[in-house]
Length: 345
Image 1 (spheres, one colour):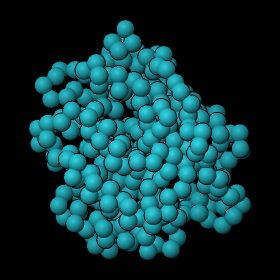
Image 2 (cartoon, rainbow, N blue to C red):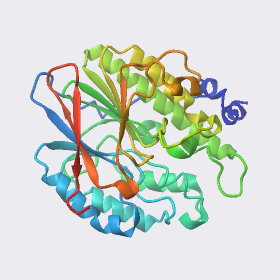
Image 3 (spheres, one colour):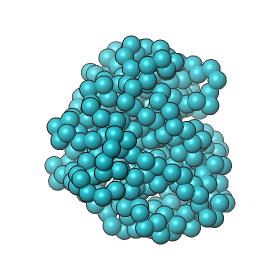
């Protein structure tokens, strides 16, 4: 019954609400504390990179450039470590992991759809996506509760629940959550040879969505408890893709309970909320959940989240820069950011 409700779309929020939940974080991985009132704190954001042979070859140079940025103290990759028409092989995963290991700073990676959800495609190798997801977790998350990077740090992880990629942490009075939300309708798009999601596919989406919503709510709860200044959410999926001229709810319905949770939590939070995503490949900054936005009606949401700003990073053929994002120690605008061109682009 629950799985059937999930596939139909509109009943997804109830299905997710019925899913079992575990503790939000590994007990051994407390949140890394930030320092309020100190100087600016800067992190870098990339996504949808490397795509294709040329970007794969130049990616180590991009890593070196970010390493050389004296302001950057942490790096996040928003997923999609390959394009959607290349093979999802173990060898490729290991090669990208070696590149990730070259980052000097703590490195947070949230999984994209190209590295598992879409691997059923014949030109991707015709894999079972759930098997590829297990491989991605095995390669990129060998130590749940620790970031990647040469100077790894502790983060709160949902590793004990089976979602080591879902993490949260605190820096400079700002609460961060990296949440595994992917394109292809959050992985409910049918796999090759099927007209709808399989039971196994649906069960995975149900569990992961419930865990992701739990992480989002816990992050906001922590921020309210500590009276922190802002919340930052980081995902792969663009749930408000401005490049689509006539989006169909049938292609987005799996995001509905996530968007509802984000609106509810943002409205209950006193400060700004920032959502960083990749997926649509074109830099964009907007407020997709503000009053008057067509996305509210699209997702069937009656209240707005005027304090939420979304930022999409460049990627794919436009992966010519990284975002340098700075937490300002004072003022109502907590985050400032600028696009820094890759010198090898």
